[in-house]
Image (cartoon, rainbow, N blue to C red):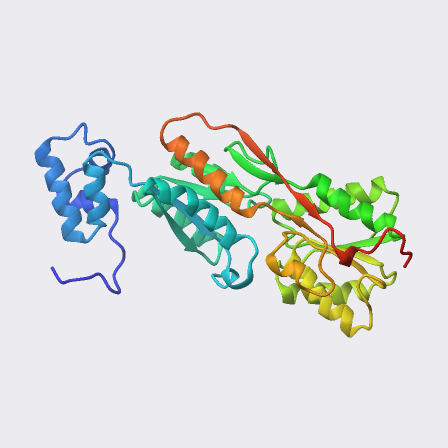
Length: 348
Protein backbone atom coordinates (compact mmCIF):
# COMPACT_ATOMS: atom_id res chain seq x y z
CA UNK A 1 0.00 0.00 0.00
CA UNK A 2 1.36 3.44 -0.85
CA UNK A 3 1.84 5.85 2.04
CA UNK A 4 -0.73 8.58 2.61
CA UNK A 5 -4.10 9.26 1.08
CA UNK A 6 -3.42 12.59 -0.61
CA UNK A 7 -6.06 13.36 -3.21
CA UNK A 8 -8.13 10.32 -2.24
CA UNK A 9 -11.49 10.10 -0.52
CA UNK A 10 -11.24 9.61 3.23
CA UNK A 11 -11.83 5.92 4.12
CA UNK A 12 -15.13 5.23 5.84
CA UNK A 13 -16.54 2.58 8.12
CA UNK A 14 -18.04 0.94 5.01
CA UNK A 15 -14.56 0.63 3.50
CA UNK A 16 -13.29 -1.01 6.68
CA UNK A 17 -16.23 -3.44 6.68
CA UNK A 18 -15.59 -4.46 3.05
CA UNK A 19 -11.87 -4.92 3.66
CA UNK A 20 -12.49 -7.03 6.77
CA UNK A 21 -15.30 -9.04 5.14
CA UNK A 22 -17.85 -8.12 7.81
CA UNK A 23 -20.92 -5.93 8.12
CA UNK A 24 -20.87 -2.25 9.13
CA UNK A 25 -22.72 -3.30 12.26
CA UNK A 26 -19.90 -5.67 13.18
CA UNK A 27 -17.36 -2.87 12.77
CA UNK A 28 -19.51 -0.53 14.86
CA UNK A 29 -19.95 -3.11 17.62
CA UNK A 30 -16.25 -3.86 17.67
CA UNK A 31 -15.30 -0.20 17.87
CA UNK A 32 -17.95 0.79 20.38
CA UNK A 33 -18.13 -2.07 22.87
CA UNK A 34 -15.93 -4.93 21.71
CA UNK A 35 -18.85 -7.29 22.32
CA UNK A 36 -20.75 -9.38 19.81
CA UNK A 37 -17.63 -10.13 17.79
CA UNK A 38 -14.91 -12.70 18.27
CA UNK A 39 -11.33 -11.80 19.03
CA UNK A 40 -10.26 -12.90 15.54
CA UNK A 41 -12.93 -10.68 13.94
CA UNK A 42 -11.87 -7.70 16.02
CA UNK A 43 -8.27 -8.26 14.97
CA UNK A 44 -9.33 -8.47 11.30
CA UNK A 45 -11.23 -5.19 11.67
CA UNK A 46 -8.25 -3.58 13.37
CA UNK A 47 -5.94 -4.70 10.57
CA UNK A 48 -8.36 -3.44 7.88
CA UNK A 49 -8.51 -0.03 9.59
CA UNK A 50 -4.72 0.17 9.67
CA UNK A 51 -4.35 -0.87 6.02
CA UNK A 52 -6.88 1.75 4.89
CA UNK A 53 -5.44 4.50 7.05
CA UNK A 54 -8.79 4.86 8.79
CA UNK A 55 -7.70 6.69 11.94
CA UNK A 56 -6.01 3.61 13.39
CA UNK A 57 -5.22 5.40 16.65
CA UNK A 58 -8.90 6.16 17.22
CA UNK A 59 -9.88 2.68 16.12
CA UNK A 60 -7.38 1.09 18.50
CA UNK A 61 -8.65 3.19 21.36
CA UNK A 62 -12.24 2.22 20.64
CA UNK A 63 -11.32 -1.45 20.28
CA UNK A 64 -9.97 -1.27 23.82
CA UNK A 65 -13.45 -0.27 24.98
CA UNK A 66 -12.83 3.46 25.40
CA UNK A 67 -14.83 6.41 24.09
CA UNK A 68 -13.19 8.47 21.39
CA UNK A 69 -13.64 11.48 23.67
CA UNK A 70 -14.30 13.84 20.78
CA UNK A 71 -16.96 16.54 20.44
CA UNK A 72 -17.93 17.91 17.05
CA UNK A 73 -18.56 21.59 16.25
CA UNK A 74 -19.67 22.39 12.69
CA UNK A 75 -19.82 26.07 11.79
CA UNK A 76 -21.61 27.30 8.66
CA UNK A 77 -19.61 30.49 8.35
CA UNK A 78 -16.28 31.52 6.89
CA UNK A 79 -13.18 30.60 8.96
CA UNK A 80 -12.27 34.30 8.79
CA UNK A 81 -14.87 34.99 11.48
CA UNK A 82 -12.23 34.00 14.01
CA UNK A 83 -10.28 37.16 13.11
CA UNK A 84 -12.85 39.52 14.64
CA UNK A 85 -15.87 37.55 15.83
CA UNK A 86 -16.85 38.15 19.43
CA UNK A 87 -18.45 34.77 20.01
CA UNK A 88 -16.36 31.88 18.72
CA UNK A 89 -12.89 32.51 20.27
CA UNK A 90 -14.39 32.87 23.76
CA UNK A 91 -16.84 30.02 23.13
CA UNK A 92 -14.01 27.69 22.07
CA UNK A 93 -11.99 28.74 25.11
CA UNK A 94 -14.90 27.70 27.31
CA UNK A 95 -15.15 24.32 25.61
CA UNK A 96 -11.42 23.73 25.94
CA UNK A 97 -11.48 24.60 29.65
CA UNK A 98 -13.72 21.56 30.17
CA UNK A 99 -12.36 19.10 27.62
CA UNK A 100 -8.69 19.57 28.46
CA UNK A 101 -9.29 18.44 32.02
CA UNK A 102 -10.75 15.15 30.82
CA UNK A 103 -8.41 14.41 27.90
CA UNK A 104 -11.15 15.08 25.37
CA UNK A 105 -10.87 17.07 22.16
CA UNK A 106 -12.95 19.15 19.77
CA UNK A 107 -13.25 18.52 16.04
CA UNK A 108 -14.14 21.81 14.30
CA UNK A 109 -15.28 22.03 10.69
CA UNK A 110 -16.19 25.21 8.80
CA UNK A 111 -18.64 24.57 5.97
CA UNK A 112 -19.95 26.86 3.20
CA UNK A 113 -23.55 25.72 2.76
CA UNK A 114 -26.42 23.64 4.10
CA UNK A 115 -25.71 20.56 1.98
CA UNK A 116 -22.08 20.36 3.06
CA UNK A 117 -23.14 20.99 6.64
CA UNK A 118 -25.54 18.02 6.68
CA UNK A 119 -23.02 15.73 4.98
CA UNK A 120 -20.35 16.71 7.51
CA UNK A 121 -22.57 15.92 10.50
CA UNK A 122 -23.41 12.52 9.03
CA UNK A 123 -19.82 11.64 8.14
CA UNK A 124 -18.32 12.67 11.47
CA UNK A 125 -20.88 10.70 13.47
CA UNK A 126 -21.44 7.68 11.25
CA UNK A 127 -17.71 7.17 10.75
CA UNK A 128 -17.05 7.37 14.48
CA UNK A 129 -14.96 10.54 14.41
CA UNK A 130 -17.02 12.22 17.14
CA UNK A 131 -19.22 11.10 20.02
CA UNK A 132 -21.65 14.04 19.97
CA UNK A 133 -22.13 17.65 18.88
CA UNK A 134 -22.45 21.17 20.20
CA UNK A 135 -24.88 22.95 17.87
CA UNK A 136 -24.67 26.74 17.45
CA UNK A 137 -26.40 29.36 15.31
CA UNK A 138 -29.79 27.62 15.34
CA UNK A 139 -31.84 28.99 12.45
CA UNK A 140 -35.50 29.27 11.56
CA UNK A 141 -36.67 25.99 9.97
CA UNK A 142 -33.30 24.46 10.92
CA UNK A 143 -33.05 20.85 9.75
CA UNK A 144 -30.15 19.90 12.02
CA UNK A 145 -32.12 18.83 15.13
CA UNK A 146 -34.24 16.43 13.08
CA UNK A 147 -31.19 15.05 11.30
CA UNK A 148 -29.29 14.52 14.57
CA UNK A 149 -32.27 12.68 16.03
CA UNK A 150 -32.32 10.37 13.00
CA UNK A 151 -28.60 9.74 13.41
CA UNK A 152 -29.05 9.04 17.11
CA UNK A 153 -26.33 11.58 17.84
CA UNK A 154 -26.09 13.16 21.31
CA UNK A 155 -26.21 16.96 21.04
CA UNK A 156 -26.55 20.15 23.05
CA UNK A 157 -27.90 23.32 21.40
CA UNK A 158 -25.99 26.40 22.52
CA UNK A 159 -26.98 30.07 22.26
CA UNK A 160 -30.53 29.54 21.02
CA UNK A 161 -33.60 30.74 22.94
CA UNK A 162 -34.96 28.56 25.71
CA UNK A 163 -37.35 25.83 24.47
CA UNK A 164 -36.23 26.34 20.86
CA UNK A 165 -35.24 22.66 20.54
CA UNK A 166 -36.09 19.34 22.14
CA UNK A 167 -32.36 18.80 22.62
CA UNK A 168 -30.85 20.21 25.83
CA UNK A 169 -30.26 23.94 25.37
CA UNK A 170 -27.89 26.44 26.94
CA UNK A 171 -29.07 29.98 26.33
CA UNK A 172 -28.20 33.53 27.30
CA UNK A 173 -31.24 35.46 28.54
CA UNK A 174 -30.66 39.14 27.75
CA UNK A 175 -34.23 40.42 28.11
CA UNK A 176 -33.58 42.57 31.18
CA UNK A 177 -30.25 43.88 29.91
CA UNK A 178 -31.76 44.99 26.58
CA UNK A 179 -34.64 46.52 28.52
CA UNK A 180 -32.04 48.50 30.46
CA UNK A 181 -30.54 49.79 27.20
CA UNK A 182 -33.89 51.05 25.95
CA UNK A 183 -34.72 52.55 29.35
CA UNK A 184 -31.48 54.56 29.21
CA UNK A 185 -32.47 55.82 25.76
CA UNK A 186 -35.88 56.86 27.10
CA UNK A 187 -34.36 58.59 30.15
CA UNK A 188 -32.03 60.53 27.84
CA UNK A 189 -35.05 61.91 25.95
CA UNK A 190 -35.02 59.72 22.84
CA UNK A 191 -38.32 58.94 21.15
CA UNK A 192 -37.34 56.98 18.04
CA UNK A 193 -34.96 54.02 18.39
CA UNK A 194 -33.61 51.99 15.46
CA UNK A 195 -32.26 48.43 15.53
CA UNK A 196 -29.53 46.84 13.42
CA UNK A 197 -30.02 43.06 13.39
CA UNK A 198 -27.26 40.58 12.70
CA UNK A 199 -29.01 37.86 10.69
CA UNK A 200 -32.78 37.58 10.17
CA UNK A 201 -32.58 33.77 10.02
CA UNK A 202 -30.74 33.12 13.30
CA UNK A 203 -32.91 32.55 16.36
CA UNK A 204 -30.62 34.46 18.71
CA UNK A 205 -30.81 37.51 16.42
CA UNK A 206 -34.59 37.25 16.31
CA UNK A 207 -34.68 36.98 20.10
CA UNK A 208 -32.63 40.18 20.55
CA UNK A 209 -34.96 42.01 18.17
CA UNK A 210 -38.03 40.83 20.09
CA UNK A 211 -36.57 41.99 23.40
CA UNK A 212 -35.86 45.40 21.81
CA UNK A 213 -39.41 45.61 20.42
CA UNK A 214 -40.94 44.72 23.80
CA UNK A 215 -38.86 47.34 25.61
CA UNK A 216 -39.64 50.05 23.05
CA UNK A 217 -43.37 49.42 23.51
CA UNK A 218 -43.04 49.33 27.30
CA UNK A 219 -41.37 52.74 27.45
CA UNK A 220 -43.73 54.31 24.94
CA UNK A 221 -41.06 54.93 22.30
CA UNK A 222 -41.41 54.74 18.55
CA UNK A 223 -39.48 51.92 16.85
CA UNK A 224 -37.20 53.40 14.24
CA UNK A 225 -36.20 51.48 11.11
CA UNK A 226 -34.96 47.90 11.48
CA UNK A 227 -32.01 46.89 9.35
CA UNK A 228 -31.98 43.09 9.22
CA UNK A 229 -28.70 42.46 7.43
CA UNK A 230 -25.91 43.80 9.61
CA UNK A 231 -24.05 40.52 9.21
CA UNK A 232 -22.35 40.70 12.63
CA UNK A 233 -19.39 42.47 10.99
CA UNK A 234 -17.89 45.96 11.12
CA UNK A 235 -18.53 46.50 7.40
CA UNK A 236 -22.07 45.16 7.67
CA UNK A 237 -22.80 47.48 10.58
CA UNK A 238 -21.46 50.45 8.63
CA UNK A 239 -23.65 49.69 5.60
CA UNK A 240 -26.71 49.18 7.80
CA UNK A 241 -26.07 52.51 9.54
CA UNK A 242 -25.94 54.28 6.19
CA UNK A 243 -29.39 52.89 5.42
CA UNK A 244 -30.70 53.98 8.84
CA UNK A 245 -29.48 57.53 8.27
CA UNK A 246 -31.08 57.59 4.81
CA UNK A 247 -34.52 56.69 6.20
CA UNK A 248 -37.32 59.26 5.96
CA UNK A 249 -37.61 59.70 9.73
CA UNK A 250 -34.14 59.48 11.18
CA UNK A 251 -33.88 58.01 14.71
CA UNK A 252 -31.80 59.55 17.48
CA UNK A 253 -30.73 56.21 19.02
CA UNK A 254 -29.61 52.85 17.61
CA UNK A 255 -29.41 49.46 19.30
CA UNK A 256 -27.04 47.16 17.41
CA UNK A 257 -27.22 43.35 17.69
CA UNK A 258 -23.43 43.16 18.12
CA UNK A 259 -20.57 45.42 19.20
CA UNK A 260 -18.76 44.94 15.90
CA UNK A 261 -21.74 46.34 13.99
CA UNK A 262 -21.94 49.26 16.44
CA UNK A 263 -18.25 50.05 15.92
CA UNK A 264 -18.84 50.03 12.17
CA UNK A 265 -21.71 52.43 12.77
CA UNK A 266 -19.43 54.82 14.68
CA UNK A 267 -17.41 55.55 11.56
CA UNK A 268 -20.51 56.29 9.47
CA UNK A 269 -21.99 58.56 12.13
CA UNK A 270 -18.72 60.46 12.37
CA UNK A 271 -18.55 60.92 8.59
CA UNK A 272 -22.13 62.21 8.65
CA UNK A 273 -21.10 64.89 11.14
CA UNK A 274 -23.01 63.30 14.03
CA UNK A 275 -21.61 63.05 17.54
CA UNK A 276 -22.19 60.09 19.85
CA UNK A 277 -24.16 60.35 22.10
CA UNK A 278 -25.20 63.99 21.65
CA UNK A 279 -26.69 63.52 18.16
CA UNK A 280 -27.08 59.72 18.12
CA UNK A 281 -27.08 57.47 21.16
CA UNK A 282 -25.65 53.99 20.52
CA UNK A 283 -25.61 50.62 22.26
CA UNK A 284 -24.27 47.23 21.20
CA UNK A 285 -24.29 43.59 22.27
CA UNK A 286 -21.49 41.20 23.34
CA UNK A 287 -19.14 43.39 25.42
CA UNK A 288 -16.04 42.59 23.41
CA UNK A 289 -12.80 44.00 24.90
CA UNK A 290 -12.70 46.79 22.30
CA UNK A 291 -16.09 48.11 23.46
CA UNK A 292 -14.64 49.93 26.47
CA UNK A 293 -11.79 51.47 24.43
CA UNK A 294 -13.65 53.10 21.53
CA UNK A 295 -14.59 56.78 21.80
CA UNK A 296 -16.96 57.21 23.45
CA UNK A 297 -16.94 53.86 25.32
CA UNK A 298 -19.78 51.66 24.10
CA UNK A 299 -22.81 50.74 26.21
CA UNK A 300 -23.42 47.07 25.58
CA UNK A 301 -24.90 43.81 26.82
CA UNK A 302 -22.36 41.32 28.12
CA UNK A 303 -23.06 37.94 26.55
CA UNK A 304 -21.40 35.11 28.47
CA UNK A 305 -19.70 33.43 25.52
CA UNK A 306 -17.10 31.49 27.47
CA UNK A 307 -19.68 30.18 29.91
CA UNK A 308 -21.89 29.05 27.02
CA UNK A 309 -18.97 26.91 25.80
CA UNK A 310 -17.99 25.49 29.16
CA UNK A 311 -21.54 24.74 30.31
CA UNK A 312 -22.50 23.24 26.94
CA UNK A 313 -19.41 21.02 26.90
CA UNK A 314 -19.99 19.89 30.50
CA UNK A 315 -23.60 18.90 29.78
CA UNK A 316 -22.60 17.01 26.62
CA UNK A 317 -19.82 15.11 28.40
CA UNK A 318 -22.23 14.16 31.17
CA UNK A 319 -24.70 12.93 28.54
CA UNK A 320 -21.99 10.76 26.98
CA UNK A 321 -21.42 9.25 30.44
CA UNK A 322 -25.08 8.30 30.64
CA UNK A 323 -26.32 11.13 32.84
CA UNK A 324 -29.72 12.74 32.25
CA UNK A 325 -29.20 16.35 31.03
CA UNK A 326 -31.26 19.34 32.17
CA UNK A 327 -33.67 20.32 29.36
CA UNK A 328 -32.61 23.95 29.55
CA UNK A 329 -29.84 25.96 31.22
CA UNK A 330 -30.19 29.75 31.26
CA UNK A 331 -27.33 32.22 31.71
CA UNK A 332 -28.21 35.87 32.32
CA UNK A 333 -26.77 38.73 30.24
CA UNK A 334 -25.46 41.82 32.01
CA UNK A 335 -25.80 45.48 31.03
CA UNK A 336 -22.56 47.45 30.74
CA UNK A 337 -23.57 51.11 30.87
CA UNK A 338 -21.06 53.49 29.26
CA UNK A 339 -21.04 56.93 27.63
CA UNK A 340 -22.38 56.04 24.16
CA UNK A 341 -25.99 55.68 25.32
CA UNK A 342 -26.21 59.23 26.67
CA UNK A 343 -27.00 60.73 30.05
CA UNK A 344 -30.43 60.74 31.65
CA UNK A 345 -30.37 64.53 31.86
CA UNK A 346 -29.58 64.99 28.14
CA UNK A 347 -32.30 65.77 25.62
CA UNK A 348 -31.26 65.25 21.95
